[in-house]
Image 1 (cartoon, rainbow, N blue to C red):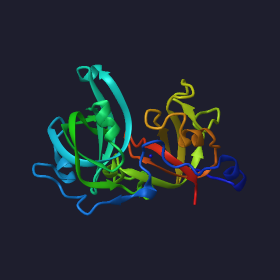
Image 2 (tube, one colour; image 1 turned 30 degrees about the vertical axis):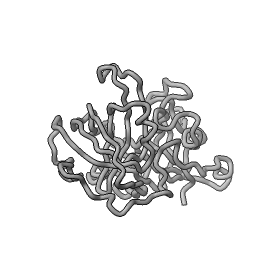
Image 3 (cartoon, rainbow, N blue to C red; image 1 turned 60 degrees about the vertical axis):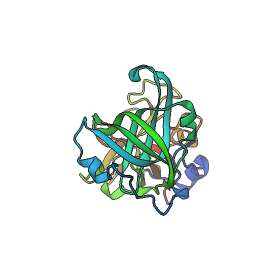
Length: 259
């Protein structure tokens, strides 16, 4: 983290918007030769998935995007923290409020390999690693290509790709509320410019709610502007991270006219 588009709209919206700031950009995908090699004592992605909630986990993965950095986070004993989307060649991880100095945060560019130690947790369906620390590794790099999961929408298999960088093709914009608006500021429309954007898209008669997470892609980014220019009925392609909140709730980083 999908609509019906006409030529005139394509000209008006100029949908050539991809990424936002440090977020993954599928066109730059690539991996070094040993991107899938784990260090001793590090879990494979399958072992991470099998690990019970609340257990300690040790993983190695590659930064795909940075969502936020907090100075003196009160929930982490006033330590500086970062929230990061990471992925390896087998799966993806959401690293929530990971202990991180400003200096190290600046080093977490897309493709950077990190070793993370923390605890596996779940919040409203989103599986994440919390209370984590990390170290930067320099033996490999990897940026994931957007995986097309359009056909998995509405299936039990979609959650298997949670937190991955994914693509949805040929989605149709639906009204976000009874007034017919194409998007809302915050989930209930109570927000303002700069808040998260929520919008509905459909495929095969089923409607889904997608989000532009303002911490990840704020109101200065192309994708934020693109969603604000959507019209009900547009057909678009989207890319973003497969976040989960009470069901699928992708954090969208790219909106383009459907190909």
